[in-house]
Image 1 (spheres, helix red, strand yellow):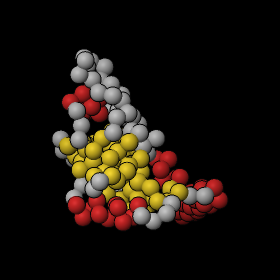
Image 2 (cartoon, one colour):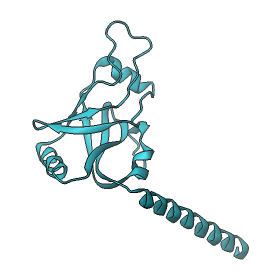
Image 3 (cartoon, rainbow, N blue to C red):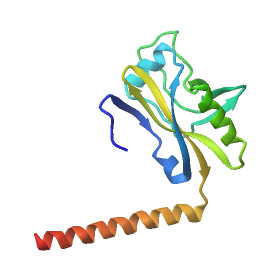
Length: 158
């Protein structure tokens, strides 16, 4: 995915693409408290244990770790609190329909700033089996070897 000029990535969940088949992605806003925004601007967050749930027509992000702001006072936030995601009604209905299927989950892929707004990219995903993970690694390694061989041939010709 090419980087947008107004997009500053804070955290990325690279393991999600290894562990899941990504079926559909959505961009969502987040309801944050002041110290959470300051902590994100400092580039501190972890999406590894994160997931999202749909409850009563609202989408909630859980398990995402945004550490306390170091210069904060008693107004600091809890590091792993539930955060409400802001999506259009149609997108929420799509997520609810997808969650009715078995074996599907909603995982966060990236946390970033788009302009001055904190956004999270979430995906409807299905867990991979161990043999799927090995197959993906094998394909990636084969692609790397072919790219290397093509580069060597081009280097000799030119």
